[in-house]
Image 1 (cartoon, rainbow, N blue to C red):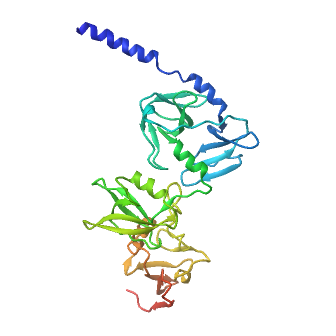
Image 2 (image 1 turned 45 degrees about the vertical axis):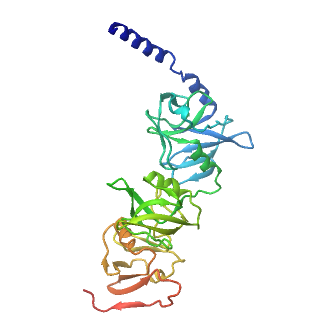
Image 3 (image 1 turned 30 degrees about the vertical axis):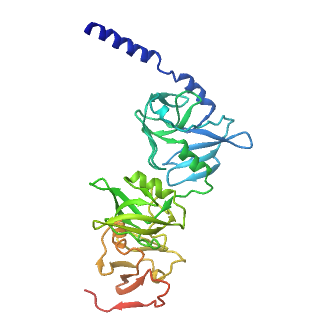
Length: 360
């Protein structure tokens, strides 16, 4: 019996190799839908009226030169360009359970590599993966006309649903509820950063996010998936655990202003910019609610009697201890020390600078 097993095993291996799909034909056909841009490719994804195509390009680090940019998502690094050649747009398909077990390849006109789908896409920034590397801006395909996404390098690719989200929305939009989160040591989604001037921010450091708008949030990917698609200005319920008690709060949704590929812009909301030692570097003409009293060069020493730390992230962490609350800042300007009350509410008409004649 043992002598029979080995020949059968060898035969099965030969069969699997014999019937493995040859993606060379797909590689050749991809020339009809991919346009060379520098050392990369862009994918024809929709037709234009002038018989040219709209090109999809994933380029998170550099902006394409010499092309008419039809749309740009700066948060993720996606572009929609006008092609320079007559190309055949691809037709994208949804991934079903059938494709999870099939051989699937990352294909460009120059190369192809095949493997299996490893994970599906969880949110606009939590990409699907293969168990093999993917080429940048490649076709993710089983057979030539069965295309399930666009590769973006490493082993990642973008699925149809999220490509269409980018293509069909008139504006680039990601929802925000005023917090950034991480997966803590207990494998729960915990509040890590609080946007200090986000309107009606109900969160505190250490809150565990359990549900948002009726959807369970077991991981950071699900947090992104739910929050990014929340409607701006809507009020949504959030179930949290705080100090071992489960409570329900309401959060107002705004559009995301920074983060992902962009710098975070927590202070742009109030019209100021700062350095890493909390010196004011810019004040917008729209600054109000006490912030207009500040001047470029002012250095903030304390916030509500707490000493200011070094570093932008640490400063935001301190300000986030008082979310959407009035704050009292100790300011030094040309050796003149004074307090300024900022983030004042509409019903507080006082707007005075309190001088400090002796400090320390």
